Image 1 (spheres, rainbow over the protein chains, first blue to last red):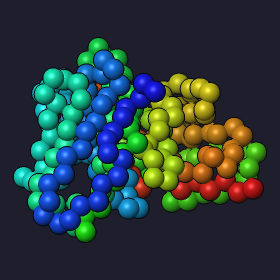
Image 2: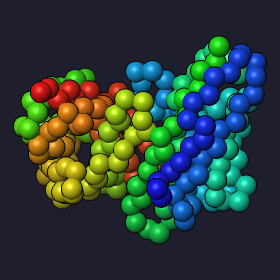
Image 3: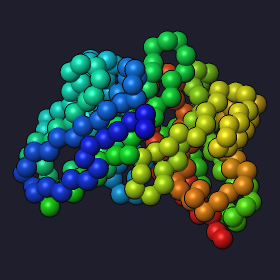
Image 4: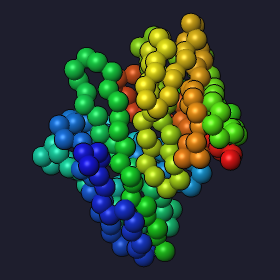
Length: 116
Length: 109
């Protein structure tokens, strides 16, 4: 399968613990996006990378959230001191952009987080 | 805020065409119309996109009005596996995707 992959697919944690999610984009895609989706809502943008540079962060991304893409390939999203309100599906998408043509974002299966 | 409005829900009989409307009256010249769908507990799946011409692929057809203020996604022969939330989005390259609540399509046997 050459699509976007995410790991883990499900995570249950206790309030106050730290969690880290991984996203592997489609090979050679230079842009990577993180979104969050709560029950009954559409996904909401969190942050975006072009290669290893984090170019935009949503106000939804509090200080407890940090994302990295150290080598311009896979990315990690860490949530520190989790709160029950962090319970959501965390989605990753990737695209091949910057060539002057319209890019399409392809989404992974998501990581579903439950904070108890 | 999302730049599109869609009906909250729709039903379609299995085997019939599903026509999902979308209004995007404030679309700008460099923005494309994209459709994604999300089957329960999965990530959004890309379906189709277009700028101003009608488009067709193996999954669906996209009809965009001449003034580009609205569009219709057509699933020619809906099956039970097409039951999902369908999102209509306008986006330019590069840009983050802003999702609205979408249309919940139920395909009925």
